[in-house]
Length: 289
Ligand SMILES: [Fe+2]
Image 1 (tube, protein in one colour):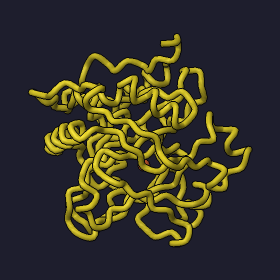
Image 2 (image 1 turned 135 degrees about the horizontal axis):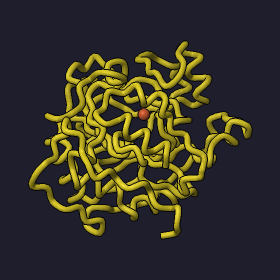
Image 3 (image 1 turned 60 degrees about the vertical axis):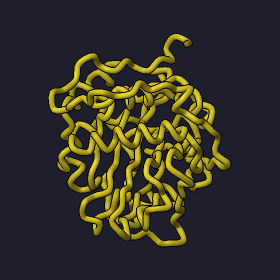
Image 4 (image 1 turned 90 degrees about the horizontal axis):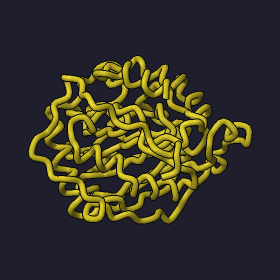
């Protein structure tokens, strides 16, 4: 690897609130990944961003449609691990109280399989080729490996309109999308400023309400193990509410642009309000790095 192109190592310690799983299978990239390329890639220009807006980003990459990431065996193991972590998910407090229904950030502390998946050089190289920029696993463990579950109360959105606090992430479906009614992943066909203006919100904050239908794009997942890549801090997006109670688990691993001297869009100020165990230390490490 070229010097400076390595991600910051995961911390060697684990906050006590995270309960590590035992009896996990090892993650084996050659067996558990099945990396394919997306058919379509859209730029920030396609969403209406100006050259001036894009100059504040390291890349004009916007988002792709879903592409295959995990093999059948990889999906089965990953889904089982995420189901085991459900009992030790985050309390829906902090940002969770107003946005995410049910989630487990910092899943890499709980599962070595997930940590090694998110940290795999094969995955980072593949995503880098798609975005045409060098990406590495995000240096803040809370966001490096996230899991979203469907909320118990299905009248609530799985995730409301928002932008992410990191520049790149993949949203990977682990449940069978053909068994899910509702819960669609959608992006706003416009800039985040426009989207927020229509909803009357500011910052990263989410809102469970409708945007004009003709301005909304749904990104379908063809099967479990498929996901898409987005420049999440620039894409206004949400996951809709479920129409029926269903199993809907997505994994959201985050990435940052390398080398570390690259522009960093991580919103540490917003993240410092999160209630995740160890988040202040994680952000301090990231900022120092
Ligand atoms: Fe998001």
